Amino acid sequence: MYRDSRLSSVLHVLLHMADHEGLMTSDALAKCLGTNPVVVRRTMGLLREAGLVASERGHGGGWRLAADLSAITLRQLHEILGEPAVFALGNRNETPECLVEQSVNAALDSAFAETEALLLERFGTITLADLAADFARRHAERRPERTAHAV
Amino acid sequence: MYRDSRLSSVLHVLLHMADHEGLMTSDALAKCLGTNPVVVRRTMGLLREAGLVASERGHGGGWRLAADLSAITLRQLHEILGEPAVFALGNRNETPECLVEQSVNAALDSAFAETEALLLERFGTITLADLAADFARRHAERRPERTAHAV
DNA sequence: ATACATGTAACTTCATGTGTTACATTTAAT
DNA sequence: ATTAAATGTAACACATGAAGTTACATGTAT
Image 1 (tube, rainbow over the protein chains, first blue to last red):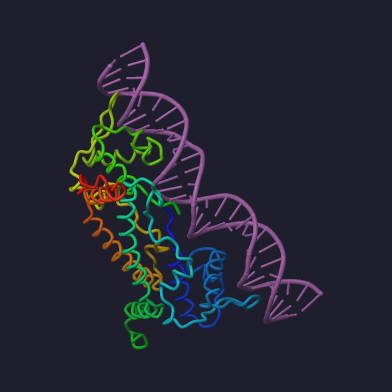
Image 2: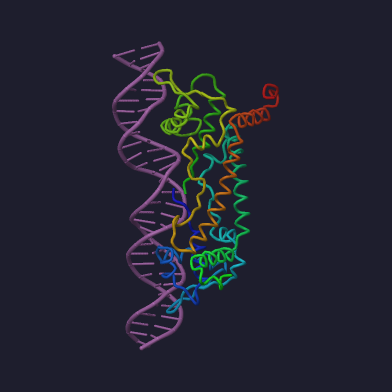
């Protein structure tokens, strides 16, 4: 089953934008992801509608951040992406008449709901600034002689 | 994205088997699910390999339970089904060289791992007997004049 | 011998994110 | 003005894996 990796892609792209002066083109961002610029525009368009990024058309155009990294949570991005289904598992029939199946659905729905709530709560506590800080730490570890600016 | 509803299907089928004297054919079980008998055999075959059910071939054959309802947990069934992916969300690239993407993956992996652990832990606490009891309760509520046998 | 059942291989279908092509539009540089 | 470079967007093909279907071999009771 294909997995929805748009949240992962969007995080990756936004962090590169944060680490880059000036505009970045869809083409440059697509190369970061190893994909096609149209895929980037398609997903970034949703973020633009939400005001997290801005785009400029024409020669010299591209994308730039329009919000603070510390104000963007994974949960917000998940919502902007349309709150796609979290689970690859699910009920066979969402509105069964069969009482047996109603019991099955009730048990599974309850477990999924509790679990999804935990995931979204956790997504709500993680900001892009957190990821950027983690990146800075990894960067410093890889180049210990330049640790200073990262700490 | 297609959801994997085999766990739901298997629970539904096993509970019907528990509530039915003697063997049940793939055809009868398929009608409970609203699907094809081949789909039933395909999935039930995994449960047979695990010893949870037994099948008898030929005229008069069919399926029967081979384990106690109270000994079968949702987690065990999930494992028997091959531990399919729980999430429809995932990383874009599981082994990135890019440090930015490594930070993204670390954050997402951690959230997914914690969440999946919770779900599986919960699956481990729910037995088929629990679902059968819930079904009995629903059954009694719908036919209050026959409550006695369900309590 | 026949009917009824499982066992299983070999497809097709389905739903979506992803990938690609094509082209319109906008903007800056020459 | 022309050209080059960029976004915006429509339209289509591809990938994945459960689910669905068809076909047929095998086994078993009547």
